Length: 477
Image (tube, rainbow, N blue to C red; front, side, top):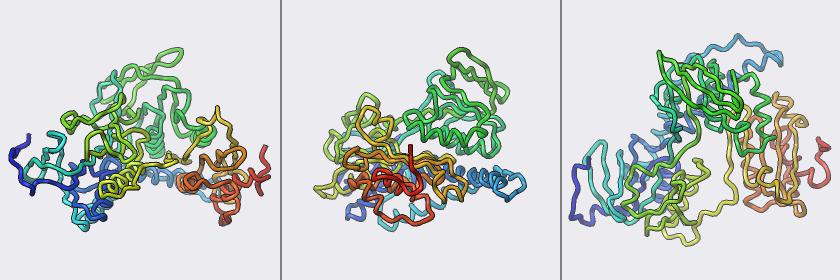
């Protein structure tokens, strides 16, 4: 409840810029706005900036995936002549390390916020009108303030399945999974998208018998099949069972076990698990701050409508990140936050107009793509340039010869339109392809850029060389 609502407000209560939500979009907007000279008020329930991504998403999941990768590579090294004792897993230490990582990073953001003289309110902001906010302060006095500008950066939360009743102990979402303090003996992951694969891979590597149920015919629906196949080939022994074209009809908890009815194309079957993780996507957080009282327009999917300035239909109210639509990625939100800050600061040329937004699945091996994909280009005239990592000296030397790099280019000019990478470190390779698309670079530009040897980055260069007559280490088909 709001304890102190003022009806006659003086100018001292008017905020120049209020940002609702301190995730990657919100704090990026706040920091940039402060650097541009604006007086910023940042409101979020957590003790420090960071948002879902840092507290309960991107960072903690990658901390777990890093440890999972270490274990996988230690076991794989036996094939190359270095044998270790079977790695032991100390769940308490793993989750403690994850928590310490989050604490250090969020604490650092708190210090950066203070250094920029940002007013940080640990609390929740809700619209009272299109010019007024009620701020529920967790640690202090609640208040009502007017504002000159507002940026909505409330992010997203896990999507749910209507026919499943969550108890958040045995039937859990991604947030709960990252808060576990022990490794389940047997786990079902519902959803074969990037969240399900990342968390499922981590727990499987730590010793859990993980099964995955996915409604479509393969992992990562919508991603290029040749990239996905690289992961599928490497992960054949990772999961206990994989059920494609399968839905979960019912899940019930009894005696600390979850009984699940899986419905496939031909039959249904009953299985029992210690935990069931529902990872079927995310939905925008737009129902907690009285959006209707501000008169903000939304689309039919529940996202806030914005223009290229990230402005809503209401004057001086902006929105960024997951609440504005796909792709729901932290780096997209951060970029949008900086654009919104520049617009509010009066920079006339500021606009959101990226050609590409890279996507990465941090499994082992990683899968990454940007720009035009081969799937999207099936009805367009393009040329697909592929370089298998079996022809890469570096890939062979580090035991990742199963990878693939490809470019999607204009068939005549060779202008790079998109690309994808599957293999170790794919997420660190995709930015070069993204930069090529943003700059309107051609295959000749990439081919004539001398790449250091021996590195995996050469696979991008050699993919480009194939457009000009043949790659050095691969003749193609």
